[in-house]
Length: 314
Image (cartoon, rainbow, N blue to C red; front, side, top):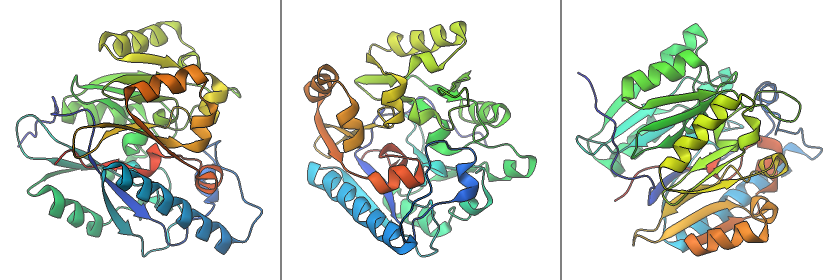
């Protein structure tokens, strides 16, 4: 039976899933496709402890702001489990029950993060759900790492994806065929002319704004198409530099409180890299939540948006 995903009811969520890491650490295999990762010069247990404190700080800041946070404690000791949005996403179609989607992951160790325990907890929050599983595409080396690979305009039904080892074109098109999203694929390169590993480090789409590092899309026609889609939606467009992208200014997420107020979540590193004018824009749009997560960013190569899997709205 075909499952209708788009259009979705909401662009932003007021409840989220976060995975508290047991043994966060440097994952050498994953670093081959993620230029943001750095091997630490500290003891592994110190790194793991600091990551737990950073996680707790972000989770508490979101809860204090009025966002519903479902915390699942990792028990497997997987180094990248703090980034659940790469393997599971939640969708609330205008018509039909909520949908959970699970994804094909690039690295063998990360595939172990997909666990029925988390899916069952999500089901307990969402109620009756449908489930679409793309994990078998790994057998054909087709990869799509959730809302790391996908940046979604959920209401308009547009899916943006920069192609990389973690986002193959066949997997992306198959996902769009299944869900009904309109595919907008492009290549985005960093300053070393390497593919940007995840779309959500160079782009964010919220209800009120879009952030994009436009010049990383080297093909002029592709760049114009992406900008046209972002601007046509009526959102405020914030174009960031490569230096800002490298400080995770693209890896931010617009959320809502359970009372309908706008929250914009990012790391303190990202907040400090935005210009004063850009900071003022965000503050005019909603409540900015920023916390320091240097260990998770430097060692894991992901920031606040990567740590959050949206669970729709209550």
